[in-house]
Length: 296
Ligand code: ATP
Image (cartoon, rainbow, N blue to C red; front, top):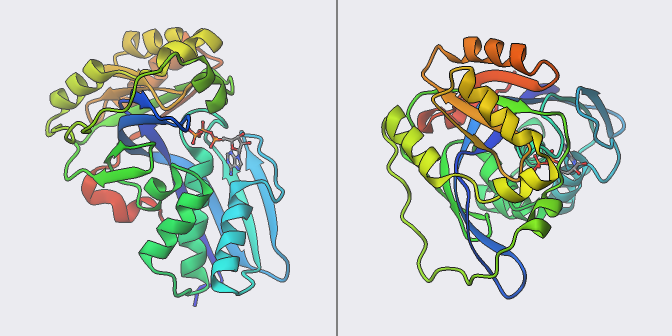
């Protein structure tokens, strides 16, 4: 039985995001092509004599019981009835409140990691239920591969294929809470009777056409709060990205590029917008899901 393990919690990217309606209970219905990038937060989980969370890295998040990491640990303790005493070190690489689902990815990584570290008997279905109670995006982060998200964001069907691509992630270093963006969204339509079928994006050009054609309905309200988003998108295009978009509720943006071009585009972007957070990474494909939460 391992005493310690390291996990990567990869960034979740909404390559497209359409708001299709608003339900009577106030929740928005959406359709989103979701993928994961190979970069993310890293977590070290070690069995210990007291549970403790230490946060380091560029992002500032509370290291107390409100952190989704501790909430994930507590929910697993409640479910199994066992104390899961763990020393957790989070290296926060992803921008906080940046539309890259960092908190959700961390929570999912903890559910997966503790199940492995303590050899817990928790089924996939039970784990997904715990994940859902922690947040709408957490179930998708349990097996970080490409998917088509519908409903209020909790229904995800896995995509069989996603073309290989580099992805450049940028953020103007301005936190943008999801609630602020939805509050500015002017949407009163009823959800459609039937959701759209999942997209067919077999080749890199198909993917770019889809990303550009669909766009992100939250980009307009997000840009009202953070006007720098437009400059991030232009900066990515001017640096050579084949297509660009905003992820989630922003303010992080992404550019897609053919495999091998990402590093150079990121370097060009950094020269244009030197204060932004900017990382070149790889889009995680359908067959890569099992290797994405890397354990060591
Ligand atoms: P989403 O699109 O799911 O809202 P996001 O990328 O916009 O995600 P996160 O970085 O996940 O936003 O942070 C959302 C909120 O969750 C922040 O207010 C943050 O303080 C809180 N939070 C709690 N735990 C974490 C964590 N481990 N990492 C990041 N944020 C966390």
